[in-house]
Amino acid sequence: MTTQTLVAADTVDGLLAAAVAARPDAPAVRDAAGSWTYAELDAWSRAYADWFTARGVGRGDRVLARVGNVREFTALLFGALRRGIVFVPVNPAMKRFHLSTVVPDCDPVMLIAQGDEDVDLLRELTDRPVVPLAHARAGAEQQFGGGVHEDISVAPDDLGLLIYTSGSTSAPKAVASPHAPIVFAARAIQARLQYREDDVVLAAVPLSFDYGLYQIFLSVIAGAQLVLTEPDRHVRLLGALHEYGVTVVPLVPSLGEMLLTLARRDRREPPPVRLFTNTGAALTAPVIARLRESFPKAQVSPMFGTTECKRITVLEPDGDLERPGSVGRALDGTEVLVLDDEGRPLPPGTVGEIAVRGPHLMRGYWRAPEQTALRFRPDPATGEVTLHTGDYGHLDADGHLYFEGRRDDLFKRKGVRMGTLEIETAALDIPGVAAAAALAPADGHDLTLHAVTDLTPDAVLAQLAERLEAAKVPAACHVLDALPLTPNGKTDKQRLRREQNAGPVRPD
Amino acid sequence: MTTATTRPDPDFEQLLVGVLPRLAGSAPLDPALDLKEAGLDSMATIELLVRLEDTYEVEFPEETLTAATFATPAALWNVLSAQRAAAR
Image 1 (tube, one colour):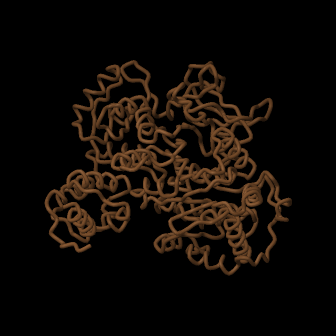
Image 2: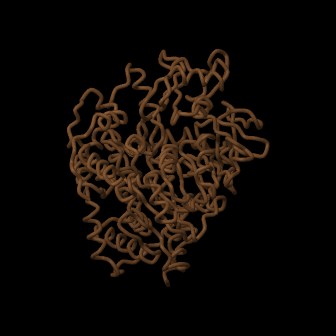
Image 3: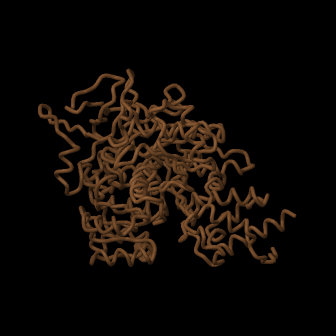
């Protein structure tokens, strides 16, 4: 407890210190194997910190962790951060193709991997030590309770995380995230969402994805309990909600879809979910409506963000009832703008590039000054940095943001301006369509819909024609058994596009 | 639970192939096939679960909803057969 006063308030490890001081015996984090209180999480994170220190890993060094949704992830994370070590979470589903770029790019002094295959793969990509998670755990166990090493004083400007973004068009690049903006963003999100200390928060999205990762910070700020689940347990997702009394569920569309399918066969009373949040890819209105039917006590909070500043907007719970399609207002203390091609602010109702200012802006891209300069542009007069997101949307008169798509998702067809999102939303409104992805016209292909449905392609198009003006009805519909997903659960449109260009849809 | 391991019926294989398009045309399925490798991700697993329950009018109890149940066609058929026997 004496260390509490020594910890700077605006560091990520400071968030944990505050939670430990306030609620040491409250449950902090649970996975399939068991749970830790806040005091235990603190003790384990200290043990991993001591293990890092004993291995010679120090301030500013990078540690890459290819670890799934297990408690050790949280202890490694806080263990690294409390010693000023930069933590680099990587999705266990990331393939060699991307790993072979990411590993040399972040230049880690140590890599930690969960499975034997992951260890072997990483060892092929680096000559730095690759430590199996079980060995790291054994190392931490030896340090546990020893407390031989002092925590250093971590500064708010110190780099805390490198978060690799999927890089929709290019090689993965890392967003360099110092402690101060991480803490600012987490607190501002919490101010809008209001997680409570009696909440049980589900992290079924990967912790390597910033949406999953920040569930750790939000839970710690609230003193809530975090429940971690892995993809191979998704079939028991609803069971987990019942068993652990989950109250807050962050959703990407694929997860929402699974939950709704499971809820249909569940005869129990709905679990006590009080809040669904959504970001990454938008839940459509029909999916939100079905969630409200299946989970009558739950409110829904759509949000919008980008790793470069973590979160841009949050719509207060159930705000969608009044403003359907909105992703909410800017976080308090930050600004969201919609700009024309020359960077001038546009009036409400006009679509332009979404831009952001505020203390939540991260430092830029890791070791990529040119890409950083392109997106993080200082004002020539004031020097204040504006983040140009590359996403398009509009604001309403009260500052609520409406997301329209990436530049590639917006196009003109038969003289009409449109976006793939509205076509997908209409497709999902058709009874029997479980998932849909529209591809904008490109590469000699006209507007195309890919749908997961038992209906015939002609039936889907006929029903779409009832819902959309003629110019917006796709030229073709392809029925699939499932949409390809990225490791973060977003529809993998690049893959759909590759398959479309390659001819008939093939397995990989 | 005694499970007389009967041979999977054609409906069963069809349901599997229905969620695993890569397997189309490869019937009869190898009972020891690694379904995860064959593309049975979490979304497909849940879809398969619902289709099996509808087709065979059974309910998979919570404790059977594990990776092991959906590991191979043989494992899944065994769990399914047990539920059918229990439902009779």
